[in-house]
Image (cartoon, rainbow, N blue to C red; front, side, top):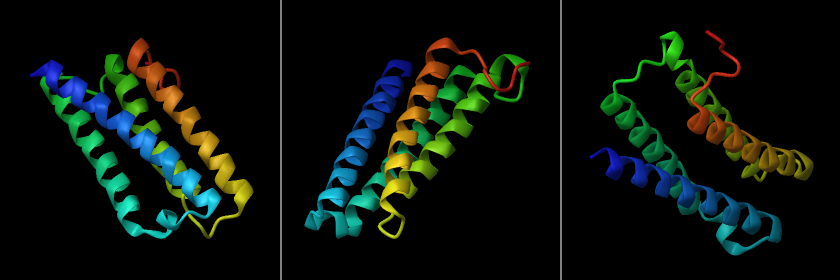
Length: 128
């Protein structure tokens, strides 16, 4: 069960990142798919699925993000929220182009931070 959830979680992360990159490319090149709401809804549902699978993994492994040895998980959840904000700013047509590009780069910074937390399992901001 654990392996299935872990690999499904990682697969959805990969698909969501790829869809984010493609959506940003479409937005910048003026592709007709950039205006379609379906891709934004699919990306939103992928992010919700990632969150749900992550919470299932937390439940399965009986991790508590509010204890000192689980602060890395609390940071990871906060970083995921920051990533979602960056994605929404990067894909917002009403934002300035410079802000969109900065948010696009910032989203990958948050992804790198999340990956670091997932591998090291050491809190960086919330030192316990």
